Length: 472
Ligand code: 2AM
Image 1 (cartoon, helix red, strand yellow):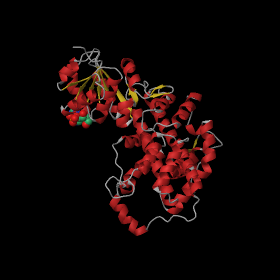
Image 2 (cartoon, protein in one colour; image 1 turned 120 degrees about the vertical axis):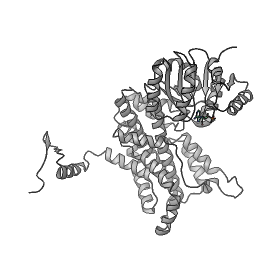
Image 3 (cartoon, helix red, strand yellow; image 1 turned 120 degrees about the horizontal axis):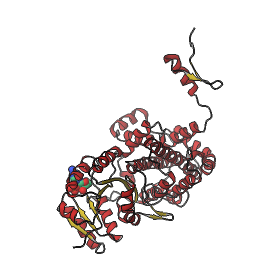
Image 4 (tube, protein in one colour; image 1 turned 180 degrees about the vertical axis):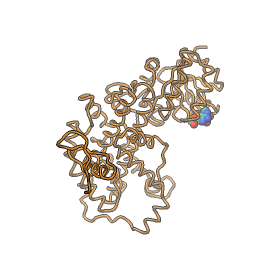
């Protein structure tokens, strides 16, 4: 029997679609799942979708023996315990030189722990972020593999073909050593949280302050998607506003959806990491807080009886508002990405990962949930200066931020006066206003710290550490 070039364990939605994608790109693949019904389903799909070279196995040893050596096993099972359990069951069947790639959203220290344990057995291990959802996995995701470079070299021919393709190559690259692949995917998800929050704030301002209907919102987002905001999330948002209710109640589906947001954890990890590394990440943090507060539906309903509803102003110029909101959204997005990229850089320095921010921006241009025209601009900013301190000081982003400032402030003023929260917009503006300021009120904080705790302070006019006798 001829052997498969690659194996995949874990046939839930992402695993199944990635396996079919790999088979379709011409790499014979063996698949396995703990419970056999998903193996049957995957095999049936491979047949239906063009007799793809995919073989299903229900016995783990048969699965492993069906693979060419060195064996390449991609794993897409639930992060945490299930990954450990799957590794434990696989390892007795593997040999020195074989390797495993975990494609799940794993907490990066777990990947580093497993890689160290498997390295002592001569088995390679990588953690690879995969973004793009079901559709991306099937037709071309963005992939962020991290771990031993030799393992990447062995996977490169397959991953390069399976990934989404953009003008400057496949949306996959060697991210770096250790858990860097998981880390970069984690920050990608934090940025995704930020984008979704900012878009929901744009929606709230346009709907609540501007009184736009769903038909008008559909048109606005469609127009935005044809300009500098062009992105997957803007595109699907336009489509959401067009969707009619599917339960026969009339109206639009979006108006029936409960205003409570779920989450799986990567956004939370991003904020924990940002705090660990002392990187300001207010836009992403605002999105996380937004999700926490959305969960308090009953409390919010009770509180709304005490405080009443927001009161929209009258005589709003809709056309001006739409234009202002698009600028506020874009400017906030620049701040959000600046935070995410700076977090990646801080982790790269702290772990000695030597990450390439331009290359990371490039592989997010296609396949993934945050794919956008905007990412090409970020890549170019890092091409121009690989050591750019912040996207905020790139000349072309700075010109845009200067041009958008008035609109950005007008939108936030309107929202605040109306009584609707725009934490993503306003925390982004606060980030900008602090970063661009030569002198902040931190002098007073230093004075207080020295006053009560003799923490000392530095002076602007003389070198050294000082402490004052604050009271005679
Ligand atoms: P299952 O289909 O047998 O449940 C996503 O849930 C994937 O992770 C599925 O392939 C699922 O297998 C697998 N999975 C979940 N928990 C697991 C565990 N404890 N051990 C092995 N695989 C697990």
